[in-house]
Image 1: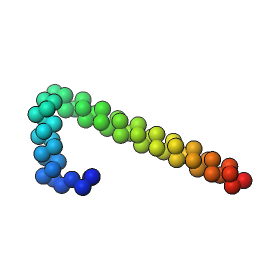
Image 2: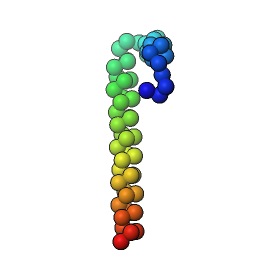
Image 3: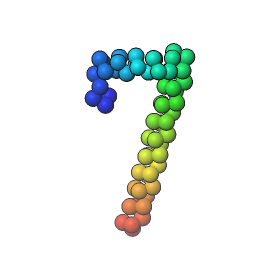
Length: 59
């Protein structure tokens, strides 16, 4: 996962806990996951458009 080992993940988690507090962490995690899903969906939509355009050019 992004070249992070267990030690780095624990350090990042501790920093996040200190910065945001325990109540905000679930909300922050949820918003990050949703953002990643939107990015992936956007990339797959663009890939489909590109593939469709390439197929039309071949015909």
